[in-house]
Image (tube, rainbow over all chains, first blue to last red; front, top):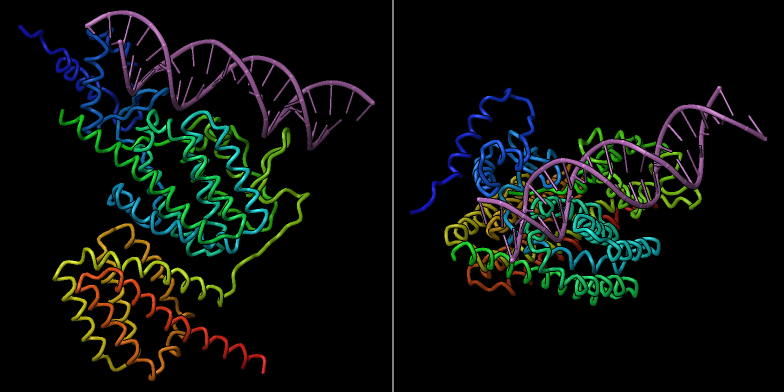
Length: 234
Length: 234
DNA sequence: ACGGATTTGTCCGTATGTATC
DNA sequence: TGATACATACGGACAAATCCG
């Protein structure tokens, strides 16, 4: 005899709880542990219910912060419309694979010495980064520094357009942080190779290595997403 | 469910904040705590973002004093200020030369039959166009149709970004002169070759021909501007 | 020259959601 | 289901450096 589904009970009580809250206020729900205690059920049931509400867009959660009522605060910065919403991961990688090697080429031709030393500085920071948030930030900073060094403001604007979408899609790579931890050293080596090629004023090599780097990233993310879909099915 | 790092969000907002500040003034940014309050995030996220900006050389910080915009005062300023209008043109052509061949490649791989027939229709209209104004219109339409056929919304957005700059007024006068009557037939033939390659699903040829076409345009515009500068001196 | 106020730099504890057993 | 370890976010507390009166 299957035990009674506490998740649906918790979901019901959560709905009424949210309904009772003052509208328009960015109310913060009690913690999962408190809710579990209040509903006299386990935390798993509460979490299942919260997942449903999050999927419905009624609440949003942030690790280390709490659970909040209302739609997730938007990244209120899209000067080119809601491009982020329409593009998916494959599109982003396709564009990156075709744009960033060219930027690396131009950077190898035009990067000024202080720009190159900044790249190396960023490489050090990237190595030193312990948490994934910092890593994402410094990785983005490195690629952007290369794009800046291409010396073409229009090209940089295009890179920023991609980068903005990429940050919205950042959850993909965060998802695979455990697996990509094994690849951290690979990425670091590829980054160094790219910067070295730029420093040696070798545009062909710089472009090739950038493409190789993005291909590695692409393959890993592909494997990640396909594994997710497999586990979804299973 | 895109989970966003607060650091990258803070970095975005800081970039816009810095960009909005008056140029040339050694502006002082708000304190880290004020920024954290303004961005509705923690001080740590703000500090991570500031570290990136500092490594990029856009800001510098001094303990007990504050955070300031611009390069460190000890370093000699190396302002390669605003880019001239002529380099602006070079930038556009540089980007087009590196983007549109790729779009043509993708179009050759993915363009649907009705999209290709639309290209041929545009070719006819381009041939029929008598005045330069409508020629520009249909020329732009053709290139955009190719970009659309690449089947990547993000890539299309980037093309539109370039196209917007291209349609600048100051730029239009130069363009009109480059479209000398002698080259109209050349352009028309190149357009047909590109569309034919796309129709034959030949991505390599499509990319090559697109590049050749843009190189022709590029060379003509270069000659125009160099003649201008010569006549300016004389 | 001195001292209080302010700001960045640094560390750590607490609280929270996430994941695994 | 319950329990435990883990990653993250936020804020407090303190030090170091600076500024100002």
